[in-house]
Length: 227
Image (cartoon, rainbow, N blue to C red; front, side, top):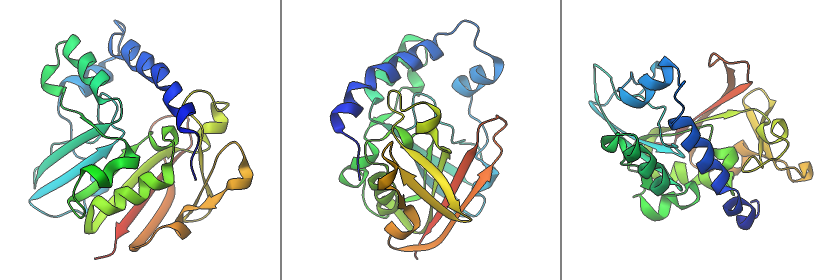
Protein backbone atom coordinates (compact mmCIF):
# COMPACT_ATOMS: atom_id res chain seq x y z
CA UNK A 1 0.00 0.00 0.00
CA UNK A 2 1.86 3.04 -1.21
CA UNK A 3 1.46 6.28 -3.08
CA UNK A 4 3.49 6.96 -6.17
CA UNK A 5 7.17 7.37 -5.35
CA UNK A 6 7.32 9.98 -8.13
CA UNK A 7 4.52 12.01 -6.50
CA UNK A 8 6.37 11.81 -3.19
CA UNK A 9 9.76 12.80 -4.58
CA UNK A 10 8.29 15.60 -6.72
CA UNK A 11 6.85 17.24 -3.59
CA UNK A 12 10.01 17.12 -1.47
CA UNK A 13 11.19 20.62 -2.54
CA UNK A 14 8.07 22.14 -1.00
CA UNK A 15 8.90 20.49 2.32
CA UNK A 16 12.44 21.85 2.13
CA UNK A 17 11.12 25.36 1.45
CA UNK A 18 8.75 25.16 4.41
CA UNK A 19 11.51 24.29 6.87
CA UNK A 20 13.98 26.78 5.42
CA UNK A 21 11.44 29.55 6.00
CA UNK A 22 10.59 28.19 9.45
CA UNK A 23 14.23 28.10 10.57
CA UNK A 24 14.99 31.58 9.25
CA UNK A 25 11.84 33.33 10.46
CA UNK A 26 13.02 36.46 12.31
CA UNK A 27 9.75 36.60 14.23
CA UNK A 28 10.23 33.06 15.50
CA UNK A 29 8.63 32.66 18.92
CA UNK A 30 10.38 31.77 22.18
CA UNK A 31 9.17 28.19 22.17
CA UNK A 32 10.71 27.51 18.77
CA UNK A 33 13.98 29.17 19.74
CA UNK A 34 14.22 26.95 22.82
CA UNK A 35 13.40 23.89 20.75
CA UNK A 36 16.22 24.61 18.34
CA UNK A 37 18.89 25.72 20.80
CA UNK A 38 18.36 23.78 24.01
CA UNK A 39 17.92 20.17 25.07
CA UNK A 40 14.51 19.57 26.59
CA UNK A 41 13.02 16.87 28.83
CA UNK A 42 12.38 13.37 27.57
CA UNK A 43 8.61 13.03 27.51
CA UNK A 44 6.90 11.50 30.54
CA UNK A 45 4.76 9.60 28.03
CA UNK A 46 7.67 7.20 27.68
CA UNK A 47 8.36 6.58 31.37
CA UNK A 48 7.71 2.85 30.86
CA UNK A 49 11.32 2.67 29.67
CA UNK A 50 13.49 1.97 32.69
CA UNK A 51 16.98 1.19 31.34
CA UNK A 52 19.87 3.39 32.47
CA UNK A 53 20.68 4.06 28.80
CA UNK A 54 17.75 4.43 26.41
CA UNK A 55 18.42 4.19 22.69
CA UNK A 56 15.90 6.24 20.72
CA UNK A 57 15.33 6.56 16.97
CA UNK A 58 13.29 9.52 15.71
CA UNK A 59 11.91 8.72 12.25
CA UNK A 60 11.12 11.65 9.97
CA UNK A 61 12.60 14.01 12.52
CA UNK A 62 12.73 17.06 10.29
CA UNK A 63 15.48 19.55 11.20
CA UNK A 64 14.34 19.74 14.85
CA UNK A 65 13.52 16.52 16.68
CA UNK A 66 10.62 16.64 19.14
CA UNK A 67 12.04 13.86 21.32
CA UNK A 68 13.69 15.24 24.45
CA UNK A 69 17.09 14.11 25.68
CA UNK A 70 17.01 15.13 29.36
CA UNK A 71 16.00 12.41 31.80
CA UNK A 72 17.37 12.36 35.37
CA UNK A 73 17.15 8.57 35.71
CA UNK A 74 18.76 7.62 32.39
CA UNK A 75 20.96 8.67 29.50
CA UNK A 76 19.15 9.20 26.21
CA UNK A 77 21.05 8.18 23.08
CA UNK A 78 19.04 9.84 20.32
CA UNK A 79 19.42 9.13 16.62
CA UNK A 80 17.43 11.36 14.28
CA UNK A 81 16.79 10.33 10.69
CA UNK A 82 14.97 11.84 7.74
CA UNK A 83 15.12 11.41 3.95
CA UNK A 84 15.89 15.15 3.71
CA UNK A 85 18.72 15.00 6.24
CA UNK A 86 21.33 16.54 3.95
CA UNK A 87 19.18 19.61 3.30
CA UNK A 88 18.26 19.97 6.98
CA UNK A 89 21.86 19.62 8.16
CA UNK A 90 22.85 22.33 5.69
CA UNK A 91 20.09 24.61 7.00
CA UNK A 92 21.19 24.07 10.59
CA UNK A 93 24.81 24.84 9.79
CA UNK A 94 23.73 28.01 7.96
CA UNK A 95 22.05 29.39 11.07
CA UNK A 96 24.97 28.56 13.36
CA UNK A 97 23.74 25.23 14.73
CA UNK A 98 26.40 22.93 13.30
CA UNK A 99 26.32 20.85 16.51
CA UNK A 100 22.72 19.93 15.71
CA UNK A 101 23.49 19.01 12.10
CA UNK A 102 23.80 15.28 12.76
CA UNK A 103 20.60 13.95 11.19
CA UNK A 104 21.06 10.71 9.25
CA UNK A 105 19.67 10.40 5.73
CA UNK A 106 17.27 7.46 5.99
CA UNK A 107 13.65 7.18 4.87
CA UNK A 108 11.20 5.31 7.08
CA UNK A 109 10.72 2.79 4.28
CA UNK A 110 14.45 1.91 4.50
CA UNK A 111 15.00 1.72 8.27
CA UNK A 112 15.58 -2.03 8.39
CA UNK A 113 18.14 -1.74 5.57
CA UNK A 114 20.25 0.76 7.51
CA UNK A 115 19.79 0.06 11.24
CA UNK A 116 20.26 -3.29 12.94
CA UNK A 117 17.16 -5.19 13.94
CA UNK A 118 16.21 -5.13 17.64
CA UNK A 119 18.50 -2.17 18.38
CA UNK A 120 16.34 0.68 19.80
CA UNK A 121 14.36 0.88 23.04
CA UNK A 122 12.01 3.46 21.53
CA UNK A 123 11.29 4.18 17.87
CA UNK A 124 9.36 7.42 17.54
CA UNK A 125 7.72 9.39 14.75
CA UNK A 126 5.74 12.63 15.08
CA UNK A 127 3.80 14.34 12.30
CA UNK A 128 5.79 12.53 9.62
CA UNK A 129 4.24 9.27 8.44
CA UNK A 130 1.40 10.91 6.53
CA UNK A 131 4.25 12.41 4.46
CA UNK A 132 5.69 8.98 3.58
CA UNK A 133 5.10 7.13 0.34
CA UNK A 134 4.43 3.86 2.23
CA UNK A 135 3.48 4.62 5.87
CA UNK A 136 2.55 1.04 6.70
CA UNK A 137 5.99 -0.16 5.63
CA UNK A 138 7.48 2.59 7.80
CA UNK A 139 5.64 1.28 10.86
CA UNK A 140 6.63 -2.31 10.07
CA UNK A 141 10.26 -1.22 9.78
CA UNK A 142 10.00 0.74 13.03
CA UNK A 143 8.98 -2.52 14.72
CA UNK A 144 11.85 -4.37 13.04
CA UNK A 145 14.52 -2.08 14.50
CA UNK A 146 12.82 -1.86 17.92
CA UNK A 147 14.08 -4.13 20.68
CA UNK A 148 11.81 -6.93 21.93
CA UNK A 149 9.69 -5.43 24.70
CA UNK A 150 10.46 -1.92 23.44
CA UNK A 151 8.02 0.64 22.10
CA UNK A 152 7.08 2.19 18.78
CA UNK A 153 5.28 5.53 19.19
CA UNK A 154 3.58 7.20 16.24
CA UNK A 155 1.96 10.64 16.56
CA UNK A 156 -0.15 11.86 13.65
CA UNK A 157 -2.78 14.46 12.86
CA UNK A 158 -6.04 12.64 12.20
CA UNK A 159 -7.18 12.74 8.55
CA UNK A 160 -4.28 15.02 7.64
CA UNK A 161 -4.44 14.25 3.93
CA UNK A 162 -8.08 15.28 3.75
CA UNK A 163 -7.45 18.32 5.94
CA UNK A 164 -4.69 19.46 3.58
CA UNK A 165 -6.72 18.62 0.44
CA UNK A 166 -4.04 16.05 -0.47
CA UNK A 167 -1.61 18.84 -1.23
CA UNK A 168 2.11 18.16 -1.46
CA UNK A 169 3.30 15.28 0.70
CA UNK A 170 -0.03 15.03 2.55
CA UNK A 171 -1.36 11.95 0.77
CA UNK A 172 -2.54 9.81 3.70
CA UNK A 173 -5.20 9.72 6.39
CA UNK A 174 -4.76 8.03 9.74
CA UNK A 175 -8.00 7.83 11.71
CA UNK A 176 -9.50 6.10 14.72
CA UNK A 177 -12.04 3.73 13.18
CA UNK A 178 -12.83 2.20 16.61
CA UNK A 179 -11.36 2.56 20.09
CA UNK A 180 -7.76 1.30 19.91
CA UNK A 181 -8.12 0.69 16.17
CA UNK A 182 -6.34 2.88 13.63
CA UNK A 183 -7.12 2.80 9.93
CA UNK A 184 -5.09 4.19 7.07
CA UNK A 185 -6.28 5.30 3.64
CA UNK A 186 -5.26 7.50 0.75
CA UNK A 187 -7.47 9.84 -1.26
CA UNK A 188 -9.00 6.69 -2.70
CA UNK A 189 -10.75 5.65 0.49
CA UNK A 190 -11.56 2.24 -0.95
CA UNK A 191 -8.00 1.21 -0.07
CA UNK A 192 -8.55 1.65 3.68
CA UNK A 193 -6.77 -0.87 5.91
CA UNK A 194 -6.76 -1.46 9.66
CA UNK A 195 -3.16 -1.03 10.82
CA UNK A 196 -3.67 -3.28 13.86
CA UNK A 197 -4.35 -6.24 11.53
CA UNK A 198 -1.21 -5.72 9.45
CA UNK A 199 1.46 -5.89 12.14
CA UNK A 200 3.19 -8.97 13.53
CA UNK A 201 5.06 -9.43 16.78
CA UNK A 202 2.95 -6.96 18.74
CA UNK A 203 2.42 -7.37 22.46
CA UNK A 204 0.33 -4.24 23.04
CA UNK A 205 -1.39 -1.79 20.68
CA UNK A 206 -2.95 1.38 22.08
CA UNK A 207 -4.39 4.21 20.03
CA UNK A 208 -6.03 7.31 21.44
CA UNK A 209 -6.63 11.02 20.96
CA UNK A 210 -4.23 13.36 22.75
CA UNK A 211 -4.10 17.08 23.43
CA UNK A 212 -0.83 18.61 22.24
CA UNK A 213 -1.91 22.15 22.96
CA UNK A 214 -3.31 22.84 19.51
CA UNK A 215 -6.75 22.72 17.95
CA UNK A 216 -5.72 19.84 15.71
CA UNK A 217 -7.06 16.31 16.26
CA UNK A 218 -3.97 14.34 17.28
CA UNK A 219 -3.74 10.55 17.47
CA UNK A 220 -1.02 8.75 19.38
CA UNK A 221 -0.30 5.10 18.69
CA UNK A 222 1.75 3.15 21.25
CA UNK A 223 2.93 -0.26 20.08
CA UNK A 224 4.92 -2.57 22.31
CA UNK A 225 6.93 -5.19 20.48
CA UNK A 226 6.60 -8.76 21.74
CA UNK A 227 9.39 -9.72 24.13
